[in-house]
Image 1: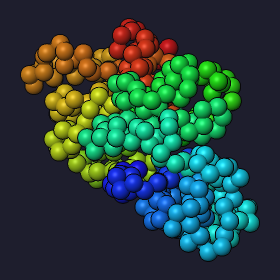
Image 2: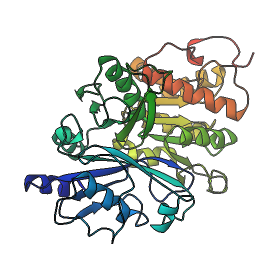
Image 3: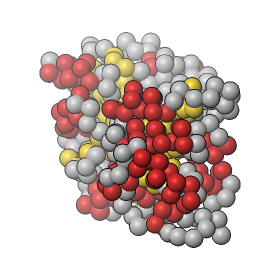
Length: 389
């Protein structure tokens, strides 16, 4: 959507009808992820891509059929291939292409997966077109937002916009549905993830009468992990699963290698505080810094540098005795503000009884989730006694 907004707005301003197709689901291997978008106007002009070329012609045929098949572009894409959907013109529709489908194979989707697309006209009341100004404004201003669209069931095509502070525009057709989807959209937005969710008619979580595609427009949250240790490998795997962009940093070249941390997006050989001096300005409330070094010459400068940023979570590994000694060293370095010290989560993680690196990783990300959601949880820093029972 980011890449094709200008084209869509230009076509609409010129009075042309426009259909938008978005990838909403993917099974197995596929060329594009959910959220990939392509727009087609009534003249057969195309912007964007949903498959890297595999099924574009068939999608254009569907889009032109959706627009009524009366524009100059009708019949140009693809040559003689009829649309596969039986939805009436003007109505949103879902189309699926998979490796096992003869039609899909014919148009070139040979990557072994199944891709599902939702197509809608942008002049339909209650749909995305009516909210396009809000979407475009937020995207250009780099304000995070989520776009939730009913892609199956009652309210088909209705769209709800959810901002990062919970403000909304539009409706999915029912207050209970709007409330449930707003809650889930904020969660998806927090980890910059897009995908489908199922609900009951009034937003019930245990039913599947309605399918909603939630598309997040936000950079993924960042996690900086300092210290190339065994716990780091487990934490990078768990954090990446939750949608974080993970960077591992350690000044010891022999330990900081991509081979040891294949789940990390980036592995850097550098001093943690020097990295924070470079990237600290971009860290915000949704990001995390995890100091797992156990070494004063690394962790004290790293903590000082992290406290100079707006990062939402600073977790520091170590026993209670280690943290007490660390506080003394921080005081010697001038870090004495109670507000700063209150930002430190040490011992790191929730009090789950974790022992292994994998269990500890779960405890750490659980603490981050609890902090972000504002839910009460048994933080190790707020308890006393042995960490391991």
